[in-house]
Length: 271
Length: 271
Image 1: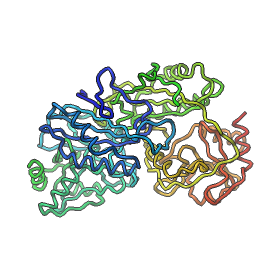
Image 2: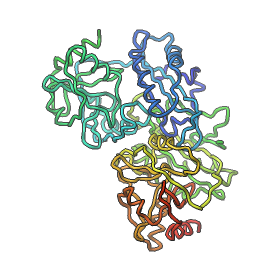
Image 3: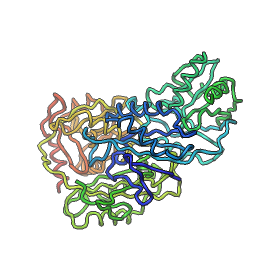
Image 4: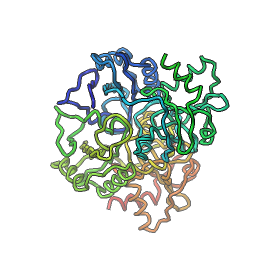
């Protein structure tokens, strides 16, 4: 399924699809990643993805590779391809044993190209609640780091292909996001999405939707949301960089039509 | 510094020190590890390490490799060596994109041999407080999984070689452990160590100390501990599998002599 791969800018072929077993990305999840949509030969929201990656490197206190290097990696990886999924992993680098990362380490860059998603529709998706909770740690909130066991465990909770996503609460019972998407609701005409001070990933499409919503004059609130806020909402949708905006038409027994605000934002996004 | 390495039981040589870039250990920290002391040709507390690894695999819901396979890996890795550090990593296996782990995946086994630690004394060590907090998630507490960014960030807080370890609080302000050691105190003659219901790693040596303490008639409590409990303690020590019991003689301005209970437990451990 993997179409092409580069490690530190060098092509990885089938005979040598390999990473150092001492890379800190493996040892401790000591790194970050971005998953991006390649469409018409260009990576969508590339600037925003690189900005989030840079923020993540700063938060984890390691030197972000030069932006031109990352752009060159992606250009080399996607050459000759117009549609697909680009995954970029940046780790603190190769280390020995021990949690402390040597400040002199050079970050490892891994760029992976996968085929595009298929079978996407905008007819709306079904969600469920996950039992797996997200821990709270403001130090790790918002960035897209490699410590993803909570998401892995949450997705292991169901296998019904009719359920597209699972909603996750944090350990205090607040709604944070779906396993691989951010969540939005419309309540009394206000667009609301969970604030991500303590957990969750600050999605590139989430930011884009917030910006677009403000531009078109919607009232927007990033705030704590409880399950009852979702159940009382008039519209609900989820976002991610690969699948865009997906209207939510059902959450367990609760059903929604695809609402006006959702439709409006979807139309803006495809412009 | 790496002396020898095996991936899935096969020797990794310098020309081929390599792991799949699609291994879920790298993608999501989707795996577990054990760090063990090789002494006199035998791995100390091997049964206990393998038991914790098994518990971790169950918690993460993936099939633990057969115990004989893991023992064979370690035997092959350490052949001809009598002293060192054995690190065993077990991941859910090689996956494609996406958090959900296919139930049919075969776990990846990575066995690494490093030289032994040197310069260890039992004269006592100095600790500091870390600003980095541990998040609370009972699902991940106790097991030694690969999501270790909190420990990485905590160890990045200091570089003074005189400070051997840093103590970590959880996000609610409870003392949980040091960055790579468990912590014990003696208070009113009672041996106390933080309970690890919400965070922290349930150390192999921690368990051994608790067992030994009960055997020799000490009153033992696993409970919530606050910083003031530490400051008010009459003895303090930390434990890990490589370094054994290390008396704490200073925590910032607070100093302790090496106490009777600590000495007694150290003597029991070296028997």
